[in-house]
Image 1 (cartoon, rainbow, N blue to C red):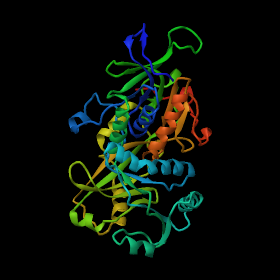
Image 2 (image 1 turned 45 degrees about the horizontal axis):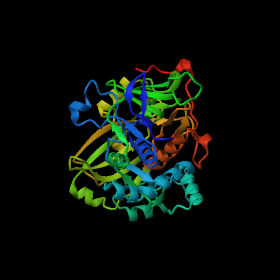
Image 3 (image 1 turned 180 degrees about the vertical axis):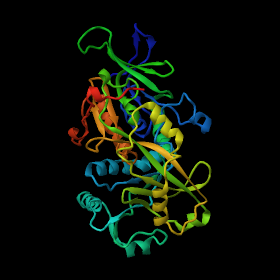
Image 4 (image 1 turned 180 degrees about the horizontal axis):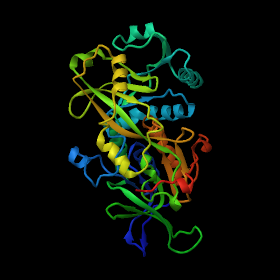
Length: 424
């Protein structure tokens, strides 16, 4: 694609971007960074900023939120699935470069331990992936685990797959800032608004000629023109009018919930050296310092496939609730079982959304010759977002698949028209 400006008779004077990335979370920001590195491509990134304070968070006008509004997310190159492991490995290998170039630190390499029953399908899958990809790991029985991490309790019938290197936790909000900083330095324009309409326009009436472009309209009425658009909107992809011909992606948008246990200095010291944990279907992160200056241990739970969100109003309501009102009995039992020695100063819940596709792989595909989709991370996208962004950037800049992984893994699937949910 060639960098140029176009006088649009329909729209008045406007800059014609080569690519507009819609969605400024971890994946969209990474894609914008990679696109801005390409010679002679003019790029913009559209997405709202994180709300500042409870008043802005709870504003009636606030509909779109991001799962990166947090200081802790598990990262590791080892995964149950070799595709996800490959995406993670490539991303993690670039973490230090991103930190150095941006001047922002977001990664702590503290290792990761996967705890489950001896011989469980999940641990067998982790071991197979580790052996296939040559990932450094150790197998610990319960006694060996207790000797290594004395303040974390696991049952006697468990085993742990421990990866001490290339794993730990990241600050997702700082990673987003880092990727956007690098994109801006290379000329990417960032528009802090919500896109509500994507329309493909043919000015000249020709068949695929130079007059074809895409018009993106934001919630406040701004119009952005681009030759191609990459949708990186996560759970929000089916809201508003973003996909061509009123299509809706086939995925579930599930309510996710976490608990944050505020810890005293003594308890933080007890857990010094703690790795990130995968515990059966749950996960736990070591104590992390949050913007309020306090240290929190985060415990997250696999989303229930039956607990689905269908509309933007339901999604906004869930984010604004911070997970309050949900029965946290099971979460508290898991916490007390894992960390019997800890005495939290306080405990609170928080909420997010998890997207789940039919094959548990993300979507990266062209929905039309000018609109691409990069979305639906199945709860595993944070750690791998840099390589996923690169994958989407390569695709949208060419208009077709351009990556060494198998394109068939990431093909779009759409809901039948009769079951597509309302946009509101």
